[in-house]
Image 1: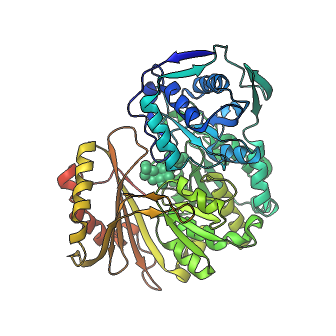
Image 2 (image 1 turned 135 degrees about the horizontal axis):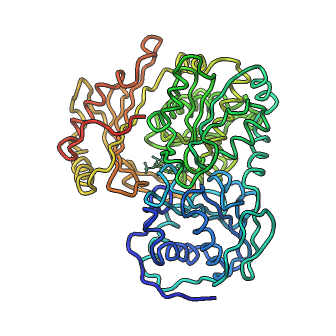
Image 3 (image 1 turned 45 degrees about the horizontal axis):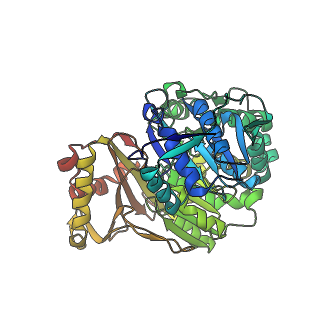
Length: 540
Ligand code: VG1
Ligand code: CO
């Protein structure tokens, strides 16, 4: 074993979902090693078993070999790794749970583009299969600032292309099929015969994996096991640079899918997933499903799938996600929870059996089957619902709104803002919160304004400054927060919501329905004054 002395590296602070940096930074001297050693120093490696895999982006394979040599040098007993160092985030979460391991390392920068000049990332998941909680990531960050050495074995690379047992030093390495166990789990939750019958009856789907990790999973499950026509899965080969795509499944970045779904002779159902496979976008023929609505529809119809036939224990959503899911919880007579952004905040609720389904407005939905959001899971639950209800996506949405009312919703992202400007804007806004109640803008009167703080109902831990919320008397809402997943400058996320009870006015364009709320947000936060921006870069 070699012990290499190193200098602490400033700035290895995990964000919303692990540590993300430009790939050349991660490839820089001691950089990856410094962070991985900090992980092992915090969680301990001696005698332990970990899962390892990533979304296949550039540097994935090299990083995997380094992490294996470091795990061995730190005394780990065994690592379970996906063939070719590939694992989607939900599949990694499942393997951690299935094998009762001590956690896992996932190499991904999720929706951020991949390639030699793009992004790379590393996240650690704990033994419940979910993202490390803040207390753990804080300890890792602290460790990166005073670390002085790391441990690595000097050995040759091992063959990760061959399934089976091998070793690195004294450590066992099990190279496993990245898809098989996950596909079996999906088969246990959903009515595969009903979905297969749907496809057999001529139902057409387009699944866009955006050249990222879900390709092999989608082909195996949709085309091979469920009998969808070959060619249903497009962009299904994971590429180191995602084929130059930006694997963020939203109408902007998955434009080809949107064009297809809104064009003549469109398929019945469209879906896309992100870099590491934990997010999803679903689209019907001519019907875009907003992620907040998707969560609500899935929760309201989950009982139609065998895995959820007994009903839900509770529904959890992140704070910026619309309240549509809360209305479903009320009608089902179950609890609803509002957590800060990031899947790590759902872990305790899922472990405690208080929530069954969770979701975020950022195209993330999942359940207690793993401890991550899960793109293909959501797509399969939609398919199960479509197979049972035998209605179009548009009809299901219309019926949902007629019953619950509609929470018009949109997120506006302003990307690559100078960090100091974004920080100044948020500071000024936070400073003005006390003066806002009672003010009227664009015909909307502010009822309450705060900076969201969360007390975990299970372990009592407190997370502060999770986003500014401004609630208006008519129930409309504005939320502003800065992204914690970017690698360059700051991204401002502006979340907009307005409720329409119906029965009239349920089929407006969301941007039109939200126009006064959007104007009020710009006036209140002085977005243009601080950032020079008026028009968002991405609207979802
Ligand atoms: C974004 C989303 C958040 C999500 C996170 C990680 O975070 O808003 O809802 O949990 O990405 O998802 P932020 O801090 O940039 O707003 V993923 O698919 O990147 O693991
Ligand atoms: Co992701």
